[in-house]
Structure formats: C-alpha cells, structure tokens
Length: 92
Length: 152
Image 1 (cartoon, rainbow over the protein chains, first blue to last red):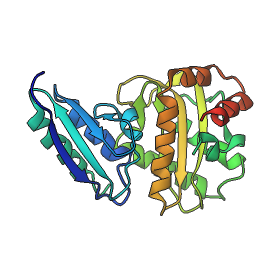
Image 2: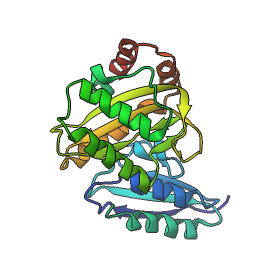
Image 3: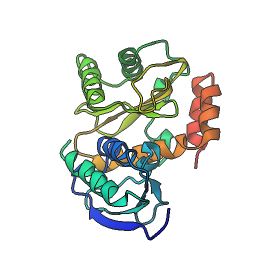
Image 4: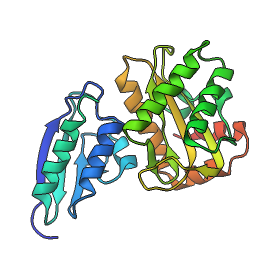
C-alpha cells in the first residue's frame, strides 16, 4: 500500500448512536475491500473497521464525530460503501 | 462502568444447558426471571423481541462471543446476564463459529447511551484473551462474578 489515506469525518445522526446493527453493516461493507479501514473518535484508541468487537469499543452516541481513515488501492470505493452502510442502517 | 454494574449476580450461569440459539436466549431470560426480574408474560415478550432482533443480523460477533439484546419497558435500568456453554452453540455468528460466551442485555426504551456504554464495556473485556480464557474456565457463579467485579 502506498500514498496517503483518505480521511472523511461524519456526525452520527442515528438517535440510538452507532449500535451493533450499523456496526455489523459497516464491518460487512469494509470487509469487502482490500484497503484498511480505521475509525477514529476523540478520546478512544483507533478502531478496526473490519472488527465488530473493536468498533463496539467506540460507544459513539448521536452527535459524535467519527473519522474514517482508509488506506489502500480501493480506498475510494471502500469509503463510499462504509458511509452508505451507516446511512442505510440509520433508522434501525 | 464495570460488567458487575449491570450483570445480575444471581442470574449468572456457568453451565448453560440449552443447545440451540432460541434455547439459550430462553434459558438466560429465565435466569433473570428467577433472579427477580419480569412479571408474567413479560418474559415471553422479551424472548420474542430478542429473537426478532437476531433476525436483523446475528449478535454472534465472532471469537465465540454473542451479545443478544433488546429494549423492553419492564426494566427501568439496563440489566444483563452472562452464560457459558461448555459445548458451544450454533448462533449464525459473523465468523460462523459456535458461541460459548453469552452476554444478554435488556435496556430501558429511552437510554441509548447506557446501552452503548454496556456494549463498549463488554467488548473491552472480551477483547482481552486472558479474561475470556478465565471466563471459559470458571465453573461457579461466584468465580464468574469475581472476574466481572475485578476488571478495571
């Protein structure tokens, strides 16, 4: 892998926060790509976007900002897929 | 928050007897009832709600761990129970492996942040291989309780 990672910040809109269902959708999406997917939240160690166990550690409530840091040859598509996964499960 | 803040001590099971996904969920909800939670009818309702949630996607998150959960109006604070299966149970987990450590959570309707904090807490403990190994080797309710209560 070479080059700079893509970074993208979003605010959690789901009233329930980033709970297990959106996390599972995110992991399922991230795991389809070769790129590494890291999720950063203030005050927490970086979470692995391909691990439910790791992402549960974020406890990201509604209104929290999280930053995706995606590194690899298919980073652009991976970002689109993971953001879509979170938005798709927003109301669940 | 520690796991001993929300796990109901008297409901802990070091040896679940059920061998199916639905059976384990029923057994664990029953363990909470025996420990003094839920009134008549509520128990079935909670089991159904947990099974419905499982249909959206298994809460078997890999590494032999599952966190079945639901919200329910019968509780006024988040409660949980823990159960160990000696044989392992097929749970349609994300990694396809059987589950032997179960943490079941029931939260009030309006407290999403408590639920997220409990998930954070459970995941932090269960990422620790030493903790999980000790949990799998614990043979009594008290031994499991001590493990939950000792974590930082």
